[in-house]
Image 1 (cartoon, rainbow, N blue to C red):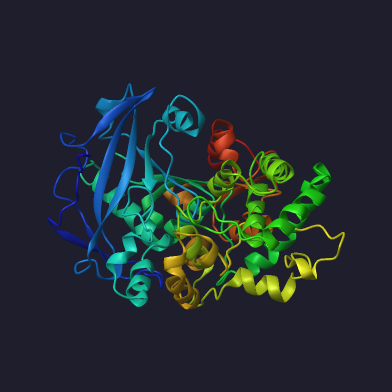
Image 2: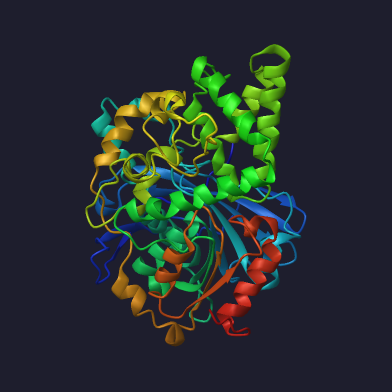
Length: 493
């Protein structure tokens, strides 16, 4: 059993900012000093002492005093030689990509971006965003306590970036509340992909709480619904398909054969899901990461080997495919995916499905009887469709919920006027980000437009990395962003 350090309602304080985004919030300040670690589970990894911290946060910050609470988990890493200084060391909070994914626990702090953070004098907070990992995870089983889909929807509307940011701000205040005026109370932020969306919301909601912010592959599109995002995404996915088939031209016929097999046979995956033709084509999501073409080719090779040898797909192959698709284990990634782009009371209305049918149906035709004989079958990417609610075992119980969420009209996530007027010079705030030229997941041009709306933000654009640059070379990526934010290097777009 984990020992949990909880925040109890000793007293509340109001936080109200002059912005349409901000509702008056009552944040829980905590009964105990959060760095009094007598009851906190801790352990060592190379280079760091690690503390597992749990916080009680309101489910609904709009009515925090009356709201139920949820557990929010943070893994806290302190440089092994600075443990005695942790009550004064500045914090950098890592916001994971997603939506709906927890942070992987590091095996070591001696490499990657964590090493850079330590070298810069930070202690590190790894947040499992609400609904993920150890932070009151959302799953079909967890939602069984609600009696209706309407109740589930009301619950799930509290799991977007605005609530994640409010959790982060509450934790920041709790961890720094006893600091003197000479000690840094502001937080620094590092956000990968969707984590960058969260940072942009943080800058909109609590600009004076942020010291430094670094975004990797995740400067969000400043849109009100997902349609512009998918309108830009589908041509990029098509380009990735062409590059894949150029690298592996023999796979044109192989993928067509697999597609025909799945069209003619109902194939059940180990967990009870269905490997339909459309689900198989979702493996194109791999195109966006380093080595993605090769992983997909290996998967195609496994399938063809099975079909050649025994005329069916083996458990090994089916399990391999199932493990490549995360929507069963991380259901938020499906049911709240399109909602990350919604604001100004707009709904997603199954945007990816609508745009595909209305504007890209010929390029992504999947129905065997509609395909030309020599027409390559094109994979899709990070796109969410209603058929997933049937084909993915863990999504089936959430079909009604997902359809209602697709019609939900969402509140604002960003405040353009606040972002435009960030007084980074006065606050000595450092803001920098990297966008990847050929990023399949986050459109570079839409990111550039947003970056231009954030006063003081320095954007670096490169084709040196794919979307997962901070994972494959975190040390160099973060080092460069720190220099860029400080003005130590100049980057002229």
